[in-house]
Image: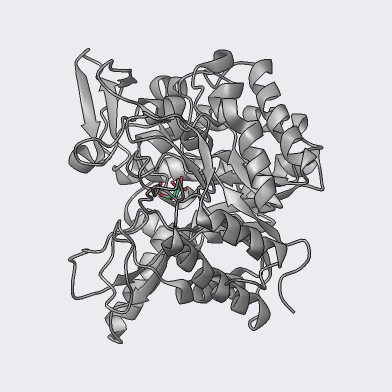
Length: 491
Ligand code: BGP
């Protein structure tokens, strides 16, 4: 059987990690623009001015989500902010898309930078220059027969909305977001068919993604999450009105959790934890209502959400057409141990002795991808799309100028093998495979450049030094064969 002829092979990126040109064409500052590089402790930090005028560098590790109210993001001349130039796709997009076409991409996932279209987020009219930029990018993709897959919001938001309204804690942000959606849906109605609302909506929990202070407070965070889920549903409904041919999906970090033992306490914990970090978001976006377990949890915690008439209908009518998800690693939960010693993509669990790990400590689990595809399809009966997967690793250029990334090939090969079984043997409906960072870009978690995922190498270091020259890695040619053979030749 194999993959369908129109299976979307390609790759994935996000504006703030890829584009650069942060002030080009009148683009406004976004929350992602005040994150520094990872020098020192490898984690990104935020440069913020507090309401009393004192300036502070906030560390997520040290200060958590407790960003005080009334903060203003500012740029410190002593810091390097990776998103400002990222890998400069803004000025290299023709060359980059030509390389993707050479690999044979049938789809390319990218996000639209909100502040390139609405610099402050609340203007009545969009910036024509920003709209034109994405028109040019889409035209270039379409020229090569590459289908754009567009994330409406990927880990950033207008800094102005964060400062003025406390970001997603306020309903005002939701209204501004919908205006942004209306303009881009209309403008690109004939160029883009596949959309996703929020990247990893289940892990939007800090100042950068939510634009709000004190996101660690339970009630405040639940209010913001409610606004996000409502915004997603309303965007889906709006998109359908504008073009019924649109296919609009959600996007979750599909963290897969195993039980540490057969202790029933572990089993219960796995159910509860999976709901908290993943399933709740899917339940709402795929089924159109808050599930009972969440309603009871809100009641127990006396979280009284601000809602408006019509919200329930909006949630019900805005269910998605497909599930987009990221998958890098699995994790383990244990009722007995609370060590949480294992790293992973945004989730820390217990170590799994059966699995090896990446250089950044993420457990490598290809079989887990098959398990996950089955779990999600069984539960929601919606088509799935893998919109992130891959190995973050340090690459080196050898004396002949070659980048031999066989470790990346073997990671991808093993995951594609399991994905193929899920389609062939288990009958899962899968629309596409878009591995992360198909061209090297800035790491979301650490701000580093040296944590690379791409088939296309970009000559740049963690401080942004380098020629930005693009070159083909060994995996470039390997993935070319995979796509040419429609996933049959994985050698
Ligand atoms: C996902 C994000 C991406 C991306 C990826 C890899 O959670 O959606 O933006 O960066 O993880 O993570 P990192 O860049 O930290 O290696």
